[in-house]
Amino acid sequence: MQYNELYQKLKEAFDLNQNSSEIVDLNLRITKYQSTSLNAAEDLLNGSAHLSCPKHDIHFKESDVINNISGNTDVDILDYDIECNKIFDYYIVQRLDQYKSNGAIILFHGLNEKKWDKYLPWAYEIAQQTNKAVILFPIAFHMNRAEDSWSDRRKMVEVSKNRIKNNRDNTDSSYVNAAISARLEAHPQRIFWSGFQTYSDTIKLIYHIKKGKIDTLNKTATIDLFGYSIGSFLSIILMMANPKGIFSNSKLFCFCGGMTIDRMFPISKYIMDSRAAIKMQTVFAELLSTDFKNDKRLGHFQNPVLHKEESWFKMMLRYNYFQKERESRFTELQHQIKTYVLEKDEVAPPIEALNTLKGGYRKIEIDVEIVDHDFDYSHMIPFPLTVKNENDVTKAFNQFIQSAKEFYKKEV
Image (cartoon, rainbow, N blue to C red; front, side, top):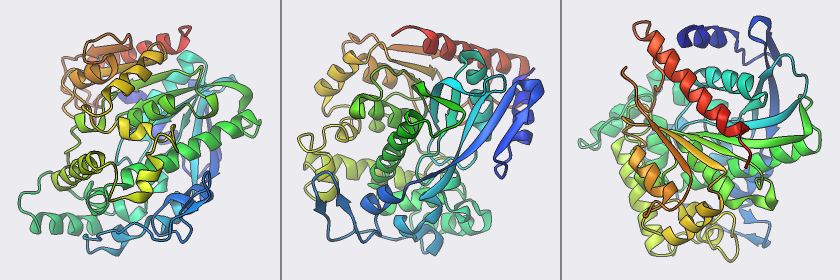
């Protein structure tokens, strides 16, 4: 079956409202589960009246100062008030001939994603080829954890127009990225707090698996990770942190990612506009250079003495900061991580994956596989759905799946 045919068939079968769907001729089952993130939201998200660090019994009196600049109440909403981010659905994709899978791969998507469509063929083939279930797990404020209005073309066109009107130098603004651009420009630290919430949600998910609460997974199931784009960034931090040893035997396959966040270039009509990207990089550079002096709450969680695990976030922010510590940890993880990058990817350049994961002197043995294709592709659309190049696209997709399969099946 061609890639575009598989994509269309899976898209038509994927029903967000059904608890379980089966496609017999594809040997596929997709099961929906619900998760809650109430405690993490209350502890971490701006707008909460109970911001705290339970580990140290510290309560932060004031919420973050947010410069709401969009002029749209749907966009300027406080993070804690977004109810769909606290109670959300995730999906398990697995072979129909397995009632309970003995392994699971948690898949994290890219930045500013609202639909799972693109990931369905990836999850399907990985599940079929590895015999592991693939868990489509949404990052905070993305997918079904994002406000519906952020995808409303009419509303977001106005937000985008205002962002261009107020700054003529702003490039790549669109209705697709208007909400995330406005929210990240207003408060770039949202990248950390949404990541930290997802970090906490992931740990909770794994504990539920190990307690036998997920009926389609054995409680002894192995846990691996798959990260695409910013999902690779989150996955790498999870592997580096390894909270309570839950990822000691895990593997991480990165796709179109693997570099520090300052070496990614997310300015795109599909991801974020230039104002947001510049503000994000500027603020994090300032926070690092001042040791988080102007953000005491974030500084608390980035103190490696107080929060060794969570502080790996700051070590993945800028390439020239904490390089020694980062490369030492990657050396320890060198047989548990692989990245698959595209030569013409302008958002996540392969050279930056090499620099970050293999180190400045290329002494780290993390496998960085760089591939190129004869057809037109991009970071956002690595496998185009055009009929014209369908044979080449299908071949490229199968090559990608084969690489992931061999890595997940290889002994650590």
